[in-house]
Image 1 (tube, helix red, strand yellow):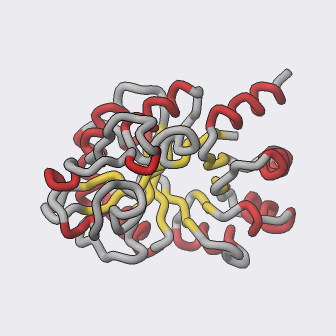
Image 2: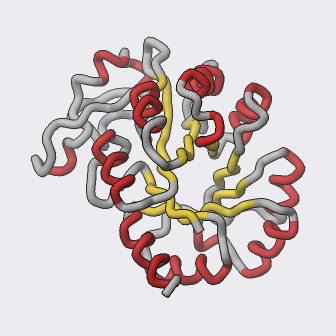
Length: 243
């Protein structure tokens, strides 16, 4: 069962920053989950919300700022001075770093609210430039965006992200549309749902797992991965289960 660091080590560091990504690797996580959107100048940037208000000291839509303008804001703003300024990273910066560390990356295409033109192509171009085709996967709540990515880069795995309560017969659905993974909320899973997914050969990466009861249940089910804000806790749990 893979430990996937949600927006990096976001439970203890500013989410979707290079600091959170570096600290996640130190925990021994297997994979980093992050979110990509487009700045005004077409730069692929790493940030979760369509607005910068929640995580920075600025205000407004990501799409209304150039990347240079976005770097002026402090992405560690909500931590009340615990950390020095962290900037919103470009996806290019992340990939240059990711090529040097032994983790894979789950890239969420944030196309469910804003239609970012050609974001799939732009993101894949950067992945290819850095030789990361075999170290990444895509996920998105916008499954049309996943189909677009699959058309451009069929070999890169894709995971269908879904809100609770999920999709009935999700294994059949993912198999039909060529998605190798299903990414549900933990509470939407059941014994029957897990079996149906496994019967269709679909991997299961579950979000966002921060409680021990959830973690134990998912370990019992044998899911592919847990997406968590606290990768160090999940790693220690899994190491303990080996003893």
